[in-house]
Image (cartoon, rainbow, N blue to C red; front, side, top):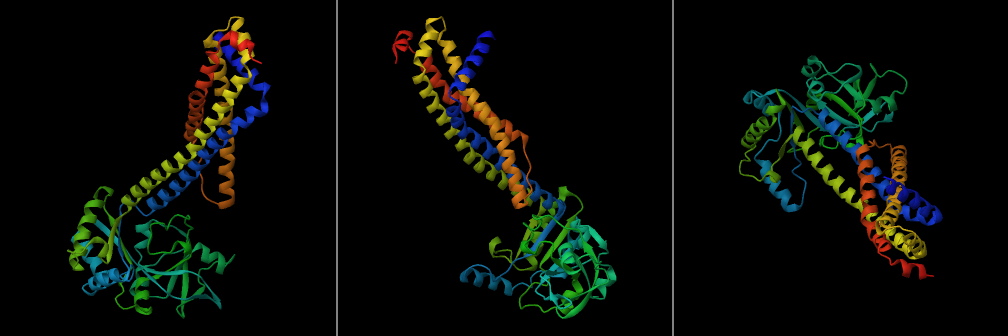
Length: 424
């Protein structure tokens, strides 16, 4: 312990002689550690938001989505159109049949997105119009800010009522209550009966029916009103998506397999490739797993990129330490002459290298926290500081100190005392 204590004291004294050089040699470690901390914080924040919103879709939910047969190249479109001619697309009748056929399913919520103009008085409103049923709120787990959701009579009688999202409320009604007010949708008046709570920015990443650019700008109307009052394109689906809810999260994959077989039969697509079919069955749990896998790959790539900075910083430290050994040969010779062993010299220079890396790592952690705060402040992205990333970055920086400081320290330790004393 006394020997290590002397090595610490002498090492710090050696660094103090060339403060500016030591500070410059720390820069690579500082920015390397800061980049690791900031990248992981941003990545973890994004991951948490996506997983939270995917979980909000319901771990018991299965989404059957109608695919656009007009997408892809001309050859692909021809194949899909041919498939489409033998299918009626997604329909409410199929949803009812699936619910009756598969006992693992509890309920379902159909959705239909329509292109319709919306006005508040004479002011145009940018929003998506989505037709759905009273079951949608419970299936998706959304919450009301004020007012009510659709009632069975609204759907049965195709009433002209609507539920808006919070951004529309803020833009159109500002400080007033929107309940009882009127929006003109496709040239017909609809009474606002409710407002949904705001959702986070990542909620639509896996939700194909709604455009992410229209975040919190949806206007929901009864599905019956959508089908009765809105124009439908030829060969279009009756509904854009059907969200089925299972009895248990353990049953979702079995239920998804049943739904795949059912829709294959109803759409005459048993022999078609999955990419050529006009529907797609997705499980919310699988979306979560896919997102986590993609996030892990992203973390590995970004972590390796940030780790390169640490390696470059380590090379800089080796360069500085070799220069220190060359400049301080007389000092080494004097220490050897008064009784210092090779191990004492090695410990001294190795500790100098470790001190540079440790101090640089601590400063890099502080800088990484600052970078993270700036990213969150400027971009309004959610970030999560992962404390483990700081420990990992510090451990790697210390490993840099050992890996790139050992050779210069060994070179210093094996210097011949007589030759070192003669050095000018």
